[in-house]
Image 1: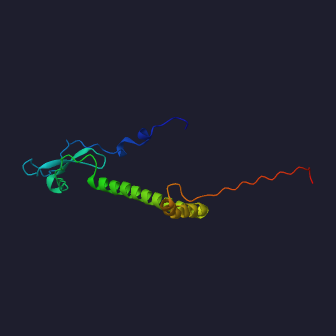
Image 2: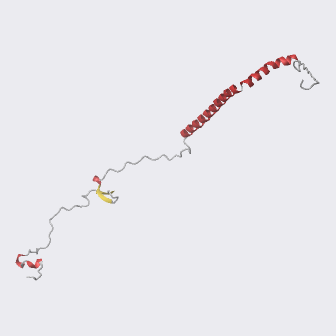
Length: 155
């Protein structure tokens, strides 16, 4: 009862499956000749490996791109040069106009604080032709000097 038994030996020999004794004969199949097969092309698969495929099942070839224009381009774009020129010129114009307006405003502010000076200069300029007409030295000035001497102190 405790003797080891192999499963293959456990079956009696008369009920064991029989091994065929005639040689292997494959079933007749159609033979495909190379001339009957269409041309084969090699295409890349999803992983980048090249695999054979019948030509009639292959995807259409890629359209050829147009040839590139290889003429040399200018170093700087002419349109960009125009934009830059108008920007610099417009900035210079704005700076000049701003400077001019600032000078005019400063002159008007100075006119209020120095108005008396301007009036005095205008009066002198207005009287200058009258002095020139009176003579080379101008009008006559009389100087009177009075000296008063007292002999007593505080009194």
